[in-house]
Amino acid sequence: MVRVLAWVLGLGTFALGVSLALWSLDQGFRLAPLTQEACVPGSIPERAELWSNGVVEIPLCRKGRVGLVLEGTLAHGKGPYAVVVEGSRVLWQGEVRGVVEVWVTTTGKGTLALVFPNDLYQPPEDRNLFLRALRVEP
Image (cartoon, rainbow, N blue to C red; front, side, top):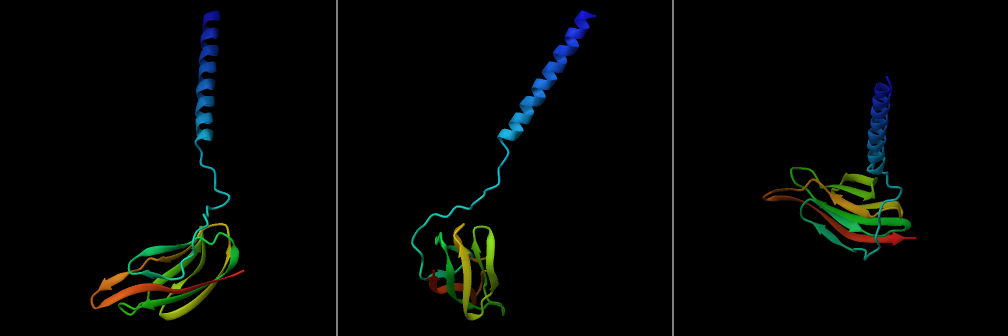
């Protein structure tokens, strides 16, 4: 009887130890949500040409109002689709036909970026996106 009790107690202790170890591993390797998105200050582009799908990073890293003068060329009757993001937040998105001026307000909590996701090249048509000017106001 004592042997059986010792065996059950030993098995219970072993099971408790394995469970605690697995719980600790889960806690140790769990991804914690980011509280702030990275932004490394750098030179701010004044112009950019996106001839294919791509991104222009604008490392502003501070609060402000940013004006982007965009120009798009049409292909198959559609202009380039542009998205302005700051970190994971979408600040503006839309189709660019001709010249468009877009103003967004930044928080400084992430790198500002201009994204061009819908390139199309079928000669003689070529859909492109151009950043003609960039203005930053405090």
